[in-house]
Length: 326
Image (cartoon, rainbow, N blue to C red; front, side, top):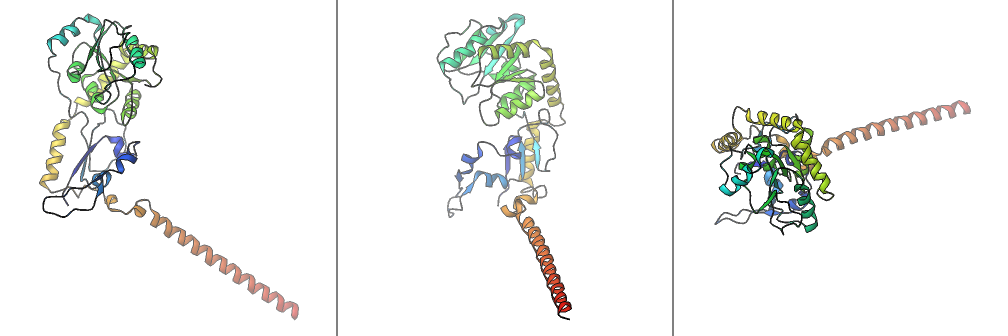
């Protein structure tokens, strides 16, 4: 069996996700040329065989908890210093003056939204003094303000690293959250699915973000949230604290990931770090064999106790009859 490395968000490694039922049904089978077809396996069976787990978060947003020795945190490994913006975009950012800019992106998986929802968002953005760069591919909203520009694509990391970035409206994807932490930009979170609600809840608990519900979102909600994270210095202070923690690591996350991948390759695995729990059968994992043994012991004790009681009762009954007969 070849050694492997699994990379996934921390909460996916610790608890069941809402995405697991459909994913668990996906079958994958690798058949090298010239070899017979092997037994199909699920994605989670393949993940279970991993020797090292690379977790895409870090202690800047996670809370203390016990972990196994084959867990390595590499959160923010993709983050890097900001590069210069394209001239047209830089001119627009500079035109914001001291008010700065707001970066808005709901990720690549959300290409558009209903016109009503887009108008609700655009109306709120039009009421803030900051310039807004919005990644949006749908129809131009009727309520779009002069301070807002629509883009099909944004250099998100470079914008968040710009000195004029004041806030980040995000869906809460792990990459975007870590880019905001890396550059110290407070967030307004509008999570949609998967790990996004968890990420935004983490940021709210750390005091670096405000969370909103996309389905019930109103212009007032978004406007109030933006004003709060921009004007209340506590949010900026909290996210800067997370940023300092993130940067203060003995080894960069990307270097740590490379080291452990090469470690597994050099040693043909990392079995000495892999817990034996992965080798247990399902009934052993759920301790059903232990529970069955304990139940058998209890049943045996009850059976013996019952038989003893019956024996004593019969003995006393017989002795009582003999006394009466005598």
